[in-house]
Image 1: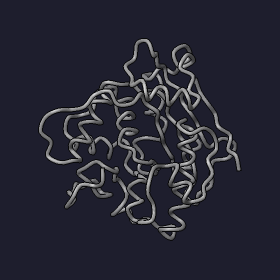
Image 2: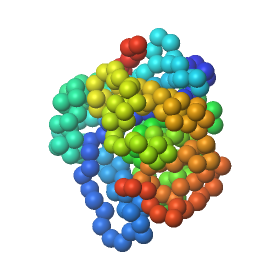
Image 3: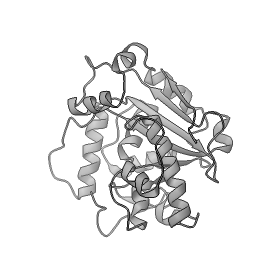
Amino acid sequence: MRQTVQQYNYVAMDTEFPGIVTHPIGFFSSAADYQYQLLRSNVNSLDIIQLGLTFFDEAGNPAPDCCTWQFNFKFNLNADMHAQDSILLLVNSGIQFAKHSAEGIEPNEFAQLFTISGIVYSENVRWLTFHSGYDFGYMIKLLLDQNLPEDVGEFFELLRIIFPKIYDLKFLMRGCKSFRGGLQELANQLHVERVGQHHQAGSDSLLTAEAFFKMRKVFFSDQIDDAKYCGQIYGLGPEFDSTGSFRTTKKDPLPPPMIRKVLF
């Protein structure tokens, strides 16, 4: 991946995690503030299950031979907190929790190697995601080995440092009024076919990448306004521009087959 990202620097990312188990109580300044505290309380209580990464170049070409990687982390259903309905969904999607428990990647070992991979902390990498607050929350917790900050502004500061350039497709959909729904619905409307299984992080990251380039071509004439869209996470605030300066919104946002390498 260190070599791949030098040319194929559009990196689509998806995670799978064990659901929602806690809900914050108290006073919240806005709907976005509540959503961040909900995210924070759950990410701090739970652990990542899967990470999917897909590598494309600026022109929308996938990396040759292997463009998608799926990392399966150590997770023990008997010891790690989870929401039962989310686990059932993941089991039905083919996730093998017995293998995660016995053969899964140690998160700290992964974080040490990923931190020096050249993929994070890089202005040259463009991150492609869909409704990705939780994805980035789990990644920040994983890489820093610490809980998320209480303040959403501090969260965005960390995001700006570790993942400087982000395009959240759910946020981009605000510029395409005809689109509604989740990632699969967006892909269906764009006539993008899925490779692999729904709710597997590798397959979802590949679908995210292909949907991004199709959306960019059809609705943005292959030119996305970074000042408007780069660095925005759907459903969270405050928003900030591409230079890292914070800004507030007037209202909260509404709440051919590829080779896939699977790592345990």
